Length: 121
Image 1 (tube, rainbow, N blue to C red):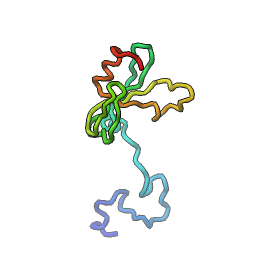
Image 2 (cartoon, one colour):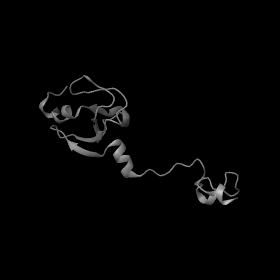
Image 3 (cartoon, one colour):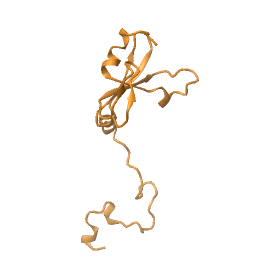
Image 4 (cartoon, rainbow, N blue to C red):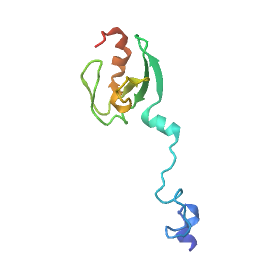
């Protein structure tokens, strides 16, 4: 291959018709995500205890990452897309709930901070 055609190609200019290509480093392989990049995109998470002694995993969501409308369980109005807020879910899922996505709740940051001063629903 000429040097001009080889420029700009990764892996020394090997073409997709090369024999012996491994599937692990192939054309359609997905790069390993950088944990710091994921943290900047989706927010860092930490664990907090509430007034009732339950531990919650809390993750900040930036306005750029907030692309859907959610309903805040603290005040009930909607959280519009583009609004920075946080997501919280129990660190220990309730028995039979299946855990995961179904237990995550999107809160206004102020509502989450005031949850200890409100009556439990």
